[in-house]
Amino acid sequence: MPLSGTTEADLHVHTVASGHAYSTINEIAAEAARRQLRLVGMTDHGPALPGGPHPYHFMALRFIPQHIGGVRILRGVEANILGDGRLDLEDPQLAQLELVLAGFHPGCGYSGRGQADNTRAAMAIMDKPQVHVICHPGNPEFPLDYQAIARHAAATGTALEINNSSFGVSRAGSADNCRRLAGYCAQYGAPVALGSDAHIAQGVGQLDQALAEALQAGIRPEQIVNLTLASTLAFLGLTD
Ligand SMILES: [Zn+2]
Ligand SMILES: [Zn+2]
Image (cartoon, helix red, strand yellow):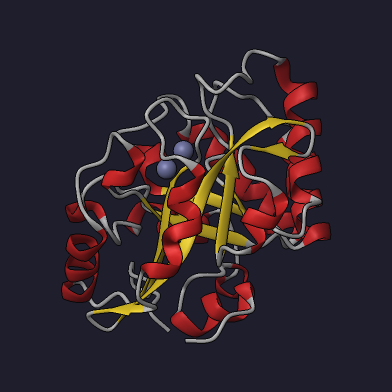
């Protein structure tokens, strides 16, 4: 069990298909193999984000080999929450993917509605069986009732992401929110996912701070769904 600051799987990585990221899936897989990762979630932004790929991108993911250079590649999406229970891919499209992250992003037609609306929208998304992870819930631009979100994550089995880039280059002001949310995840036993949110190959597998913050908050290693290849596949109901 790799607990010294590394994990075997990164569940949040962007390729050139996102429109504002800089590496191909082949480049990402090569770097992942070099870092001894065993699994990468290819989670490009959903179609509603400016510059994001057309829905055809997600339907064509069947052309991506299951393994590249020995690394298991998950066909995924970082879908945009557009309202209560509504994402920017249709349910049958989501059902074809192996990994569905869902989160709030500016510029997608859902913004500025306040904590109560955001919490209701996120909880309705967590009720969807196609959704596996709520990504970067600590973003201060989309405030949430963290206690309610953590309880609902535990009830629905949806993982809440601790996003490594939220402690550095992305979504300024997230860190304290992520720590509060992590505390509630520990309290309620909610599943937790770690993601690098890499937008270039060099960032794949950079999960050290997210992992350290999770453990420091009292989250138990078995709550973290992607510590190992086996735990990741089990959480998603997949095979290698
Ligand atoms: Zn995002
Ligand atoms: Zn992302």
